[in-house]
Image: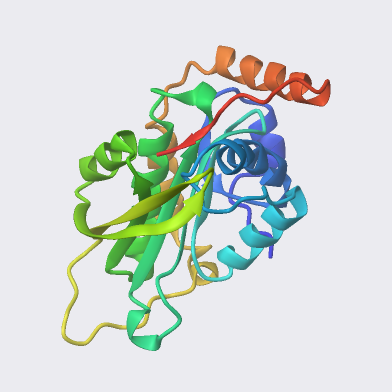
Length: 240
């Protein structure tokens, strides 16, 4: 499924970063951010980086129900965030799991904040009530980032994953996206909102949260991409 709210032609003609729904054209940029996390850190419990084709398939599957956002400038992905189901059991359907990843070159530009603010705005429009984030511990930066949005600690699974020669705890944080009620309507699938002006407003508001001066960042991302093509080690990129 391909969902586009900002045409690629428009984006390629502007340097200002925008927050928009992801599409298959973003798979390479998403994979470039995620692969170093998988290879070099316990932040993700995957051990083999997914291919670009696999990332494109994950994006398409997610967009059938939930938001998958990218922050991009000149078609370079600066960061991404997405939501997914908390559990397949029907009573959980008002809850989502969320994740955000930012390119290492894009720190302190407001990318992560813009992506999460936009993600939660869209999830509210859909009718979701609770968001949960899993964080492999220790990770003070991610904990602080999530708590700045109002997430609170919900519990810890101790030594639940083994990676890179060590056992790792995973903490869970939860956020009330909006108050629940005694008779909640089922959340709406994302495609139903594609023509809703409030969705466009949320994406526009998120885009304005990102630092406008990204010229050097885009150049650095291109340099990294060329270096990887030449076989040089890839730079680290970390999850929030």
